[in-house]
Image (cartoon, rainbow, N blue to C red; front, top):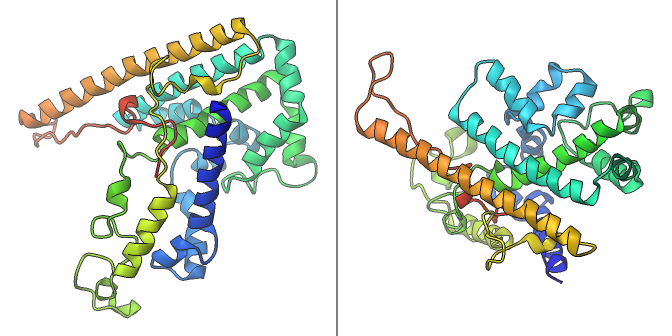
Length: 328
């Protein structure tokens, strides 16, 4: 019953998001400062400006791109090798490794042998799931689309172990995106509902002159936008369990994993406990990094150029602030 309620809740949230965020003439199109054509152009091109693997399309073969698009570690390794070795990517990589170990550990409980894994990846539902995930993403929708280079044909070209890895990476990447991928810290629904703090639109007086405005005026959006914005957030801001939740505690979400018997239940519980232990240890490391960064800033340390060291903390990967699915 717990699992059913959670799954239905997740479906309801995403259905509300579809209706309010992307459906023509719904709340977002009315709240944002775009007409219908402008909004569609924004949706169609936004992903090109969000690094995360999309930009590798021109650097990798189509086969390698399909294997990498969900593999966060492979992507971060490429970024670090190119010289982008930042604290953000270091924390993103460590968080990914923890998430992936949890997902793989859970899958291995259900499919412990090579024969089990082969049956799983050759199941039609598994194939359709991954092909839908790949084909439905803008970044991959124009890759391997016709004839012998179609997505179904490409799927058949991968070995069983590769298919199993791709499914695990896809699930892990989805969890990565809905937990930390929004890069917010804590629950911000109350702020997003305040049009004077985070406006979805601009008052007429703030619009540039070429758009019919004066280019100057108040910072708050008009009340119509404020109402629409608050309604959008009210529809999507459904509280979710915290990611860090001790086994047996009030927010313990390990019950969503079905077990065939007591032995399998014990194995799943062990995977969950290890996951929680790793999250707490990683959270402690994140806090230590932030304390050191803020101490260096406050002490007036200088960088190699002799300028004041400006080094702020980083909280977006700290598990203590994350939900199992971002509630905004």
